[in-house]
Length: 152
Length: 152
Image (spheres, chains in turn red, cyan):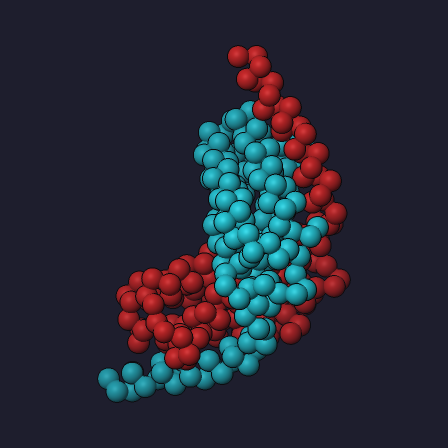
C-alpha cells in the first residue's frame, strides 16, 4: 500500500521536472499570444475546410462539415483564454484596443460565438442551402473583429 | 420568398470572397503545420496552468483544473487533423518518421489521448492527490512522443 502511494508521487515529481524544464520558457504574455495565434490557425484550418465545401471546391460531407463547425464553435469559446489580464504582448497582431476597449472586443467575440454556434445548428440540418448563409455570417464576424482589433 | 432565398446566397458569395482572399495563402502542408503547432501551443498553455497547481505555485480550483484537463483531452483528439496525408512540411518541427512510421506515431498519440482522458476523470474527483500522478502520466506521453517524433 505504501509502495503504491509512493510510486505515483515520485513519478509526479520527476515528471514535473520535465514539464517545467521543457515548457516554461514563455512569459505569461508570450504564452497568451501563442495561445490565441494557435486558436486562430486551428480555426482557420477548419474554416478553410468548410469554405472549400461552400464554394464547391470540395464535396459536401455532412458529418465532416459538422465536425469542422463544432471545432470552430469550441475555438470561439476558448480563444478568450488568450486575451486575459496581462496578455498584451508587444510582438503580437492584437491591437492595444483589445484591452483598452475590452467591452467592444467582448461584444465582437460574442458575435463570433453566437454565429459559430448557429453554424453548428445549421450543419446539423445536413442541408447545404441552410449552411451556406450561416457560414457567411460567421465569416462576417471574423472580419468585423479582425478589422478593428487585429493587425492583419 | 424569392428575395429571402436570394439574399443569403449573395451574402455567402460576397463573404466567400473575404475568406478566400484573407485566409488562403497557405499550402495544405503549411496549414497543417500551423494547425499542429497551434494545438501544441494551446495544449502547452493549459498544461502549464495545471502544472502550476500540481507543483504548488498556484491555488487548486477543481472547476478550473477540470476545464484545463478537458481542453487538453480535446486537443489530444483533434491534433491528428494536423498530421494527415500531405501534411509534411519542410520547416516544421515534426520529424519525417511521423509519416514513415505512421503506426508508431499513432500509438504514441493514442497513449496521449488515453492518459489525457484519464486526467479529466481524475480532475472530476476534485482530489488533487488523485490528479497529481495522472498529470505526471500525461506529461510522460508528451515527452515520449516528442522525443521520438519532434525536433525540440
